[in-house]
Image 1 (cartoon, rainbow, N blue to C red):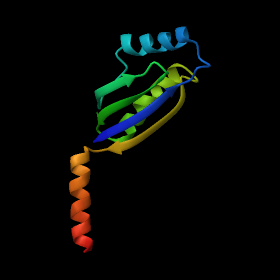
Image 2: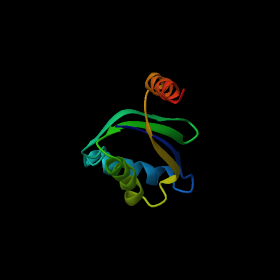
Image 3: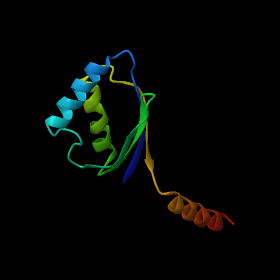
Image 4: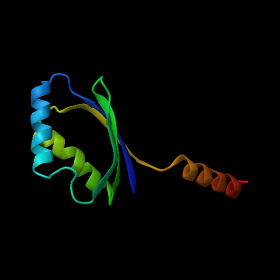
Length: 102
């Protein structure tokens, strides 16, 4: 299942502290956790970005985000995560639904 996460970094956490959290998780091989495959992970100069991941369940993607919060309290200002699908699939599904409702 695909999940799309929009995230914003907390500017109250120093850049050095964020780097330490990232190095800790990445060097230890904790991120991404088992059951999560990162497809894209993009950041912007303004401290926000997206994570597109395939995960076995919502619990797996939750674990992936929670580990950043646990490793560095206040790491994120906010996150928004939802299941996602390619637009072509969403359009086909909507067409099928509209036909069934007609």
